[in-house]
Image (cartoon, rainbow, N blue to C red):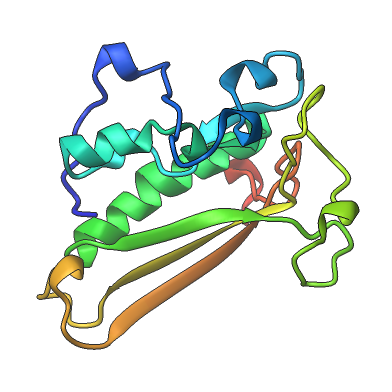
Length: 175
């Protein structure tokens, strides 16, 4: 991803499209989130950070949405729109890999389906306990991330997914 960001066309802003790689019976839907008062969905990768029209179109796949608590969504949006954008500017572009973590028994290992305890209300969509993000760039910042032929710089994060932001510091309470 390069630091230049383009806007999302209005006709796509509240729209996602099916991912033809997933059968409709095994795919989630935006309407599945309507009955849940505590969860909504968000993009795993925000379409407005796409570096091309084709990438932006692909970012609107249903497989790019994931359940999030509203309080966490604020943290996730800040992470993506401010921090990742800053890293991309400072490092001549970045590659980002992100996704859900399911660790309901807190053993540090991926849970089996039987251990997953929470789902979007009225659906089979599992709610992650955490999200991860791995950001890579070229160690030599003079090389763009997509053309790097040397060692990589790697930043990795695990963010707890909670209904509140108790793990986060409020600006007013920071010392």
